[in-house]
Length: 261
Image (cartoon, rainbow, N blue to C red; front, top):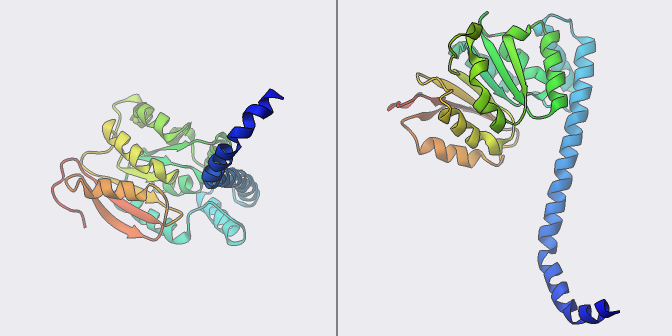
């Protein structure tokens, strides 16, 4: 009873506060629901993609695995990159000829297979995936494509946690570690700038030149403005090498005073 007596004078204030923050609370709930739905759809997509590719492809043949991915994407929602981006990615790999590649964001293993099939015999791919299910399925797809564990490493963690631990995984034959000459970012665009800064801080980018590919599945992806501002503010180290719809290649060279074309 006493609670009601105390609450009655406060009702106008409670109503005013609830009205004032109703929009913000509703927006927050909507974002949380959208994130949950994306996560659920992503897990369903990963499972269904894996089941299709695993059962339809020729095991041990990387090209067959990729063709089966493309066949699935023709008729189903897919997290695979578009054919245009896939061809552009192949061109970059052939031009850069990297021996050490970092992939942030695995997405069923499609891009991992594309990268691995173009690396030299002594090349090595390190791929980082936050979701354990996606990491396990992606690793199985890589093995189905015919690659061996000596050619790649899957790290199941956030990119922020993985980057400081990368150096041992870049060591050829347990010798001196090599710097990265190619980095593919296809995870959370809001992490693109912090991760780029972390890679530079850990001195993991090849100082003589490293191509960083940014995949953005939405042209309005949050985080792109920040990384673009960072690149333009440091013309001595960074330049935009090429730009397509949904993919950008930036070039890093320590102390570079010229712009790459």
